[in-house]
Amino acid sequence: MPASSPDTLRREIERCRQLTDAVLLDPRYRDRFRPEHIRRAVYAYIERPAKRLRPALLLLCCGAVGGDEQQALPAAAAVELFHTWTLVHDDIIDNDALRRGQPTVHVAAADWALAEFGADPAAAQAYGRDVAILAGDAQQAWATAMLLECADRGVPASVVLGLVGRLQTVLNHRLIEGEMLDVQLSYRRIESCREDEVLQMIRLKTGVLLEYCAAAGAAIGCRRLPGEDPVVDALGEFAHLCGVAFQLQDDILGVTGNEATLGKPLGSDIREGKATVLILHALRHASVAQTAALRAALGRAAASTVEVEAVRQVLQEVGSVTYTSTLAERFVEQALARLRMVPASAPRDLLEAWAHSMTARTA
Image (tube, rainbow, N blue to C red; front, side):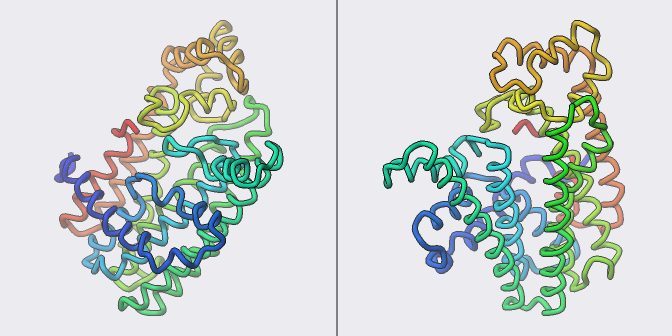
């Protein structure tokens, strides 16, 4: 078991959140974004309550190699901004109405068009989409500018430029590849989708960003880029594997969790007919009657609460939840094996606790 308790980890994540928010919400950045609707859209998710797990991971990895977290703070803010633009664009692609229990950017901006311009509903919807796309673009540019500020805090220019290069080539390209795979999977018959394809999509959509966060924090801390230090690489691999476990747990919570804590409708993945490890396992092992229950709701936006509940029951009965949970735990164990390469320290203990939290979380 990890040396650090869940409460200690929560306090540390909260401390990192406060440090990161002080950078993100610094008034000197706000006037860069004009006109007002872009400013509101850029800050919409940033100003909402959030744990800031990615900045915390970056700062912990910096500390785990003996680095100065003050030097890494702009990078911590940068990865949160980078993550945020992907959420804004992902919400458009998925036609999601809620994010953290509040309207998504494109939905909120559509409401602004209705209220301020008197736009008709179709025009307002188009306006909301356009504003969200532009806001995401602005956030991505801001992330790069923020990362460059690490040089002002004493991080060697070679390390900063190397991290910027990886952000805009390796990370950006792999994230977009993952998003494209996700889109393509949604257009295929679910029976044709394979578990290894879903796991590869998860690695690209979720794992690579966490890998970048960990490796960037370690690189700033020890002044060596990924590929130049085995500990930097080990922390990146650790975080990547945790990211896969995180998403598998997210899929489980999407059908077994609580709407109030999730901040999104329960069973949305079922109504979308999303190819998840859970659903693919269920389709492989369901009886004829159970398969009929699955097909009655999968991919049907109008599926009733009763039909969605029937799917949830099938997922439990055929062992899909247990299977996915066991798979997530396996990824955590692989991650912890990488973490053992890092010298013992309080930050490493917190990283171990963080890894275990991937599958213990309820929201």
